[in-house]
Every structure is written in C-alpha cells, then in structure tokens.
Image (tube, rainbow, N blue to C red):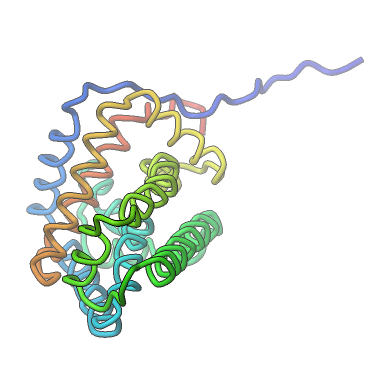
Length: 261
C-alpha cells in the first residue's frame, strides 16, 4: 500500500498581469534605488562604459562586427546586473546596500547562475557571428564605419539586407528577452531551477504583452542613448535599468507563500 504523501507537489511561481504603463513605475523606483545607493550602480555602469569603449577601440574600423557586438551585449546585460539586483533587494528589506553586497552576488558558488550565464553567452556569441557573417557576405560594399553601415546597409535601395538583419535579430532577441526578463532576479531571490525561472519569465511576458513591449522599447532606447553619448551615458543608464528590472520582477512574479520555500 502506498503511504500518503504529506508533501503535495509544489507549484511553480505564479505571475501577475500588470497595466501597459507599469514600466514607467519600474523606472521611477529604479531611479530611487540608484539615488539611495549610488556607488555600486556607478561602478557597474562605469564597467559597462569601459567595455563599450573597448569594443569601439578594437572594432572601430570593423563596424560589421561592432553592430553585432553591441546588440549581443543587450542579450547578456541582464546577467551583468546581478549585483544590483542584490542591492535593490537589500534596500527593499530595509537593509544597507553597498558595493561589497553587489560584488558578493558574483561569486560563482551558484551553478544556476553559471548555467544561465553560459546560455546567454552562447546566444550572444551566436548573434555576433551571425550578424558579422550576414553583413560581410551580403553588403554591397565594405562596412567599416557607422556611416558605411548607414549608407550600405540601412539606406541601400537595391537590397533588403537591413530588413533581414533586423528580422534575424528580432527572432533571436524576442525569445531571449521573454526568457530572461525576470529569470535572473528570480534565480538570485529564490531557490528555483533554471528551467522554472525561464518558464516563469516567459509566462510573465505572455501575461503582460503590452507592458513587456513598452519595457523592451525603454530598455533598448535608453541603452542606445547611453551608447550614443560615447558610452558615458551608460554609467547611469546601466544601473538605472538594473534596479528598475528588480522592481519589474517584483511586480510580475507573486511572492512565495509562507512555507513554500
């Protein structure tokens, strides 16, 4: 006779639908967190700006590679903000957030973060290679500068390379965004597996499609503005969006019920 099961199967995290305008609230709350604890955010932002400047220096005359590299950076950016999620969580709990707390979140003791980071790195690298191959193979002339990219790819009236480039990028970016929008904050906050975090993230995106569309647009627009200022704007934009992403996770995923951990 099978003994009774005193521990029924645990349901995964439940998601909440939010109004389409909710991302503006996330930005406001993220800005408050950045002002309350600026040092960790500015350090992360400075690191991102220096990384972007390094890309410009290494591939400045190879814009065919640079275009894919910067768009690939957007795919892995949620992982880079892990330490700032920890700071926002501490502030939310009334604790002190500091640089040591942010850096402690990077210790590779959690294999789930390592696995998810590797998946994002593979996706980002795949897009960089795809983008570079597409531009170098099908562009009507060499693309060595932003002006070349604008003239040869974007404004080319004889072909559809830019449209194909955007389409392929969207095909990769949409599922990556949906699967990671709350996954990494969840992995930091809860003892969930990578698969559960990904499926919950996708569920959150599907439950609030208009809010997610606005959020993706804001993430892209603010990041591009930061890049357009010779990377200097990233010093503020990166931590601002990171803290805001924590509040997005808090809104989109219901908290654990008592006794479910």
